[in-house]
Image 1: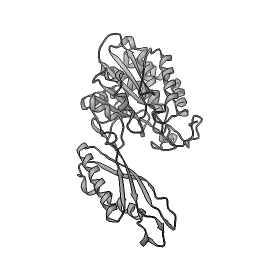
Image 2: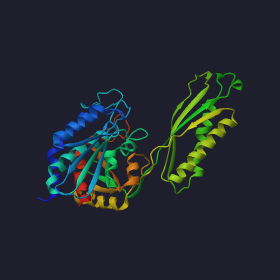
Image 3: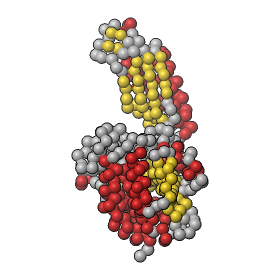
Image 4: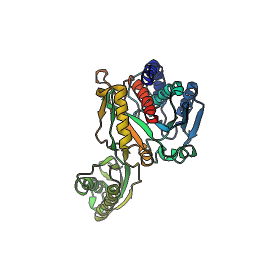
Length: 394
């Protein structure tokens, strides 16, 4: 039996066992940089597999090592660990036991798949050359991003530039399928915090007030010019506002309004220009209407660019492992990922793992309280990553 078939057999053999691991992780989600219980559990699983070299990184993360029989290349496989501040609405028996916290972005799947990959590769360690690094990374969901902390660790720095692989669940893709995109893939992400300071008062005497509600409304509408009139039509850009707080009443004009949003694009030069234009516009609108405006736009994750040669190679590896019908080409995705930091310094490939199943009603999107997966995807994710790792090492 060749090594590809051995990987497939092992993935199938252990898939049910790893369903239980995924469900445990799903039941016990932890927020970004607070993954202490998760870290302990993952370490226990790695130890049970037989892996002896496990280092702590970024406090709640882990970097484990599997050596092949001979020296050779090194590759890093990454899974993120943190959950989201979302109250789960699924009624499954393995629903979150931590109120208000949920693995609604599939990081429980990422960890489980990588643990399955670890088990497969450890059992086959006498059949390949090289070294596999397994990174369980904390804090992907919030800035500054756990990737930035991992990259400062001595255990990571000593690796030097090496290929990085990562995968992300995608409910729009059916379980059993995966998707790849060479080159530009995911957007940069900057958070926007705007505070409009006016003068509150009785709503019946607006002439005595400086209405921050009205001013905020003008700002939100006018700001869309940054995308619709200032950005090149050739450069994908998104400006969205998702939170407005104006704590007045039906007859009370408040003193201030806060607005929160996000700006995303694929061009780092335009990214800087857009933020400057937005800041200038927002402040001038507020000043022109008699108010003060505080604008805070902390710089977030860069855009994610897959290495073209590596990604094309990994796509062919996936076709070899799963069949051509189960490997698709992806479009640009305006979501953001701190895996992007790794892509700036290394050959890297970040691809999508299908987890949806319309017949089973598993269709909810990422970051929703009803997100769930078809658990058959665990075998696909774990087996494929093991195969792609060995393809890269070879």
